Length: 154
Ligand code: CA2
Image 1: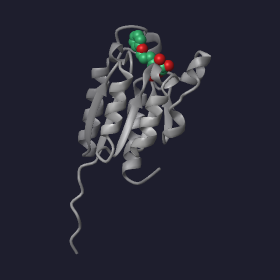
Image 2: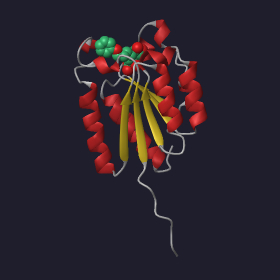
Image 3: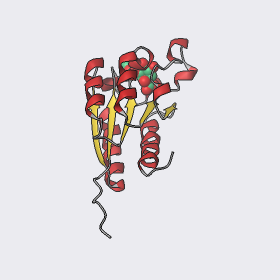
Image 4: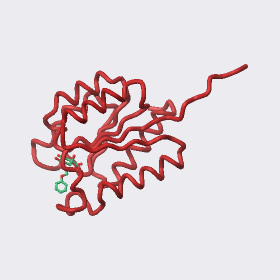
């Protein structure tokens, strides 16, 4: 019996506003790793797992929405740390809801233990789940969660 060749699974990692500044300021909240450090570690994990990884950061809401729209039918999972867009963006929420790509929301800090305005996420209801509070480790935990989803496990 011949089976269709499977394409390499693809994970898209999105980072929103101000995350390009990681490592430079507020290390007591966000840690000392830069975004490049985090992406390098994810790339190593992706190589080991045999999946393709694409990383994109923007300070612009529309640019993130464009990437989410483009992921439809192309990415198998999305990891997103939307930064402050978490608490403001109905546009990113609608893009995630419309993309049909399982999406995991992640945060370096525990947004539920900070200012009241950070407790609400517009995105959480359209994501598979949320990981928050493990510093740079949140990305690796979210990556592990994405591998489970790609492998057909919740
Ligand atoms: O904890 C997270 O990952 C956040 O998404 C980070 C956002 C914040 O607005 C969210 O509420 C929670 C902030 C992005 C990083 O901002 C920086 C600002 C200065 C220096 C370094 C990072």
